[in-house]
Image (cartoon, rainbow, N blue to C red; front, side):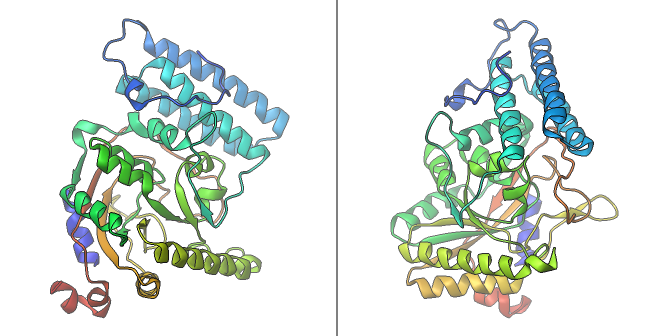
Length: 359
C-alpha cells in the first residue's frame, strides 16, 4: 500500500468580526481591479482593523503573547498571498473578518463537536463554502492538478448503488479537506462528491481555536489519533471510549450505505526529514484492518481507493509532533496535487508486499 501511495504522490473594509453571508464561489476573484484601483491598500487597511481588534481582545480576554503572535504572523502572510492571487478586496475583508471573529468566539466559548459532526451550512453563513474560499487564494490552480478524476464517476455510481467508498490517504496539512473540494469543483458532479466526504478527524482540529471554524464546515467522525491518545495519561480511558463510540457510529453509517469517507491511516500528517523533504507516514495496519472489518460487518460493499496528497506547501505542519495546542502556521501560496487510484484489495496489502504487488 505504501509503495502504491508513494507512486501516486509522484504524479502528483467590512466589520472585522461580522459573519460572512452565504455567497456563490464565482464572486471570489474579479478579472480586473477597476472597482478597487488600489486593492493592496484596501487589504492592508482591513488587516490593520483586524490587528487592532486582536490587540484589544488580547487585553480583554487575556490572550497569550504566543497565540497572538501565531495569529498575527499567519494573517500577515495571508494578506500577502491574497495580493499575489488578485483577490477581490471586498471578499478578502469578508473572509478575513469571519475567520478572526470565529477564532475569537472559539476562545470564549469553544464549539463542542459530536461524535459525528455534520457540516454547518444552514443559517446566516455556510462554513463549508467559507472554508473553501479561505484557502482558495493559497492554491496556485494553474500549477495544481487532480489525477484519476475519471474514477470519480465510477465512485459516484458505487455510492448511488448503496455501496460505500473510503479514500485511504496520506495527510499533509490542515487544509487537505478544502483542497479536495477545490480540486474537485471544476465538475459539478465531482463537487457534489466533495460535499459528501466524511473525514475521520483527530482531536487537534476540533480543539485548536484556529482550526475549529474550518472543521465546523466539514463532515467529521471525531477520534483521538494514536499519536496523541496517551497525552495526558489520565485522559486515555476517556479518549478510548470516545474512539469506540465513533467506530460504532461509523459502523452505523456503513450499514446505511452510500457513504464517502476520507481517512489517513497513518494517524497524522506527513513530516519533513532532516533534508527538508516530506516523507509519507506509514499506514497503521491495525487501523486499516478495523475499517475492513467494519465494512464486512455492515452488509454493504466497502471499496478502498488510495489517494495521494501533495499539499505541504499550504499551511505545512511543524517539523515535529507537538503535544500542546497552538502551532505556528504558514499561509504561503503553492501548488496542490491529488492522485486517486483504482480500488485496492486491502486484505492482499495487509498480507505483505508480495501479495500487494499482485493487486
